[in-house]
Structures are given as structure tokens and as C-alpha cells.
Length: 85
Image (tube, rainbow, N blue to C red; front, top):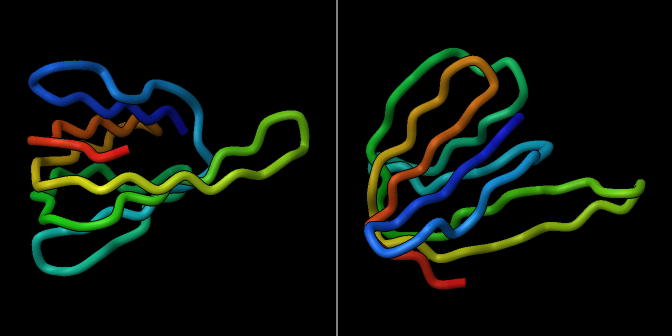
């Protein structure tokens, strides 16, 4: 699925991921390919994404300070207030 992470200042990430885990305002949740369409608020916490490239899997963690996530047709858009890489 395609994930894009944007803050008011810059684009943080744009690319394909295997799955991602988000710090929802009511608890964390995971998004996989073919996830149902949804919009959710994000709280402060750890955003984790798993990326496979050339048969190597890498887990990337970023701290976010709230925002929203939109999931639609295997595209995930995160509008975050602030991201710590």
C-alpha cells in the first residue's frame, strides 16, 4: 500500500509499505493492504511502518504528536502536527 506522511512544514515520507501501525487517539491500530476506508484522529505516540525492498524487510519508527489519517483504496495519508524521525 502507498503511505504518505505530511506535516505543515514538509513531506516526511512517501512510498510503498507492507503495513503500518498508528497511535490512534483511542488506542493503536494497524493498517494492512485492502483495509476498509476510514478516517481517524491520531494521538501522540509511535508510528511504525514495515518496508520490504530487495527481499529485505526494515521496520521504521517515527514519533508523532497527533494528527489525522485517511485510508482509501490502498492509499494512506497521514497529516501530522509534528514528526520526530
